[in-house]
Image 1 (cartoon, rainbow over the protein chains, first blue to last red):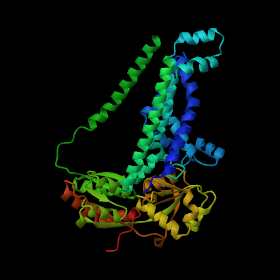
Image 2 (cartoon, each protein chain N blue to C red; image 1 turned 180 degrees about the vertical axis):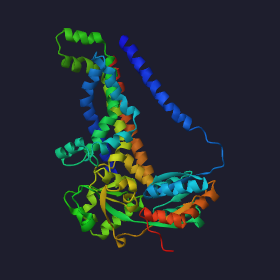
Image 3 (tube, rainbow over the protein chains, first blue to last red; image 1 turned 90 degrees about the horizontal axis):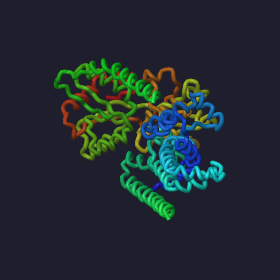
Length: 225
Length: 271
């Protein structure tokens, strides 16, 4: 069987949407984690790290049941959008955002925390607002961490399997991602097809990651100069 | 500092409570005296989940042979067996997968036995406004039906049966964009049970299981809508427990087991 390019498009689209969303949501969260002096901050950090520890089946189970039509939250979502979260692209996006959260937030927060506090203080002394300080001082000095976080999020979403298997329903063009397509081919004894798809994904993932880390190196060199 | 002392103290107390409450349970699972009990590892189609649990329980009581069940889509299990999965017996939801394994030399052709015929039903939750019991498959065209769960026809016999039934009813083209695929017939049932799909094509064996009682209403798909789901069992050639595996297959042929299979919604093949 030929390669299912639709599944590739869908997977790339999912990874891109999740990465952009996590950049928007993750930056403020990482900023807060890096600079907040709140005593209970470690609890938030633990929650952010949870998806690294928990199996994706837990997330899948809750999307299906706790956000399904039998739950108040699920009914609210259905009244809002007209359909369940399961079996939709939005459902996959939300599942992936939760599942990839630490892969974005942790590198972001680590690189923010690594910025020399004196520079931040200097910027403030010179009258720059915190927002301006963030974009003019903190972010440029953290480019490497930002690129790493975005790349990890993208890669992690590309390789997602468990959540998609549990809540996707295997709909072509909507929820059948490459990982599901490969799984189906193996189950159906289509080894040649599985092999072709897997090799294409391997090549694509390597190329993307190589570009990202190449860029990262350049950013690092520029930072040094 | 004071906070950390309290925190660490609380953690210690909590872990002590956990350990002490887990204590007695560990004593209960003290190793049983070494006997020559054999353990059979059985791969079975997902529609057998309830029936085979009871059958295995009876068999264990009778013979002392422990049965470990591994449930999944027949195609997926076939795949695993072909690649050396350590199963002793394989219950498929069709006859083709066992034959495929026999042809590959992985299963014993002499052991092949048709133990039951599975039935396909169209299921909706009890509170659904749809009325499949009286209206049949035409309810699929109701606008409230956004998603229809079936097993993946690529590797689950019940999924193929569902597609055949939809085509027979002339509805396939109209509903194909609303189908969601479960990895096996149990996942399809779970999609419908959780309400995420409004209708599910599932095994009769699933809806008559005790834990499903009162949860839904269903319509039995007429037998001429899809090729009969004749289900076969084979023993696996690589198994080190050939004798025990063959004995278990013999037990499946007994009247006692036949009655149990019927209780769980299977039809027995004509002798």
